[in-house]
Image (tube, rainbow, N blue to C red; front, side):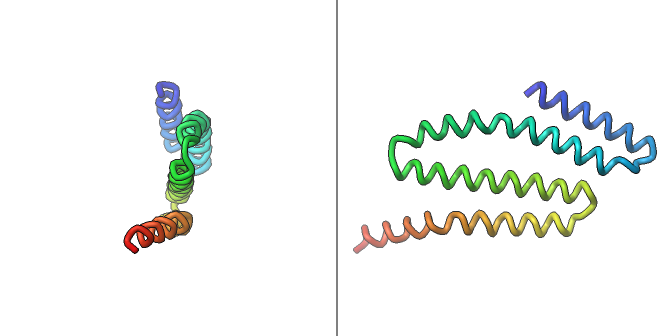
Length: 126
């Protein structure tokens, strides 16, 4: 975590220097810093996914729930990064639309699981 914080502080200082130097390259610097931080953060996701996969290997229901959770977290992360990038480039309206699309996609991905849960509940009630 300290390396991540160090990278973020270094990026902030460099962006401040770019802003003071005229600011023409500021959006490009912000995108580069964002990509560097994103790549650093994504490198940690592999460890988490392998640990969670080993936990979900016990049953089909747990594996299905785990798969849905990982997809939802992945979609939310990509949506947040994309919306943040749009905001950094001054496109707040586009960022809002990206967030709405991300929410809709998460809902779409969760519909099969929700449908199977509802049919399971209907079987228990019948």
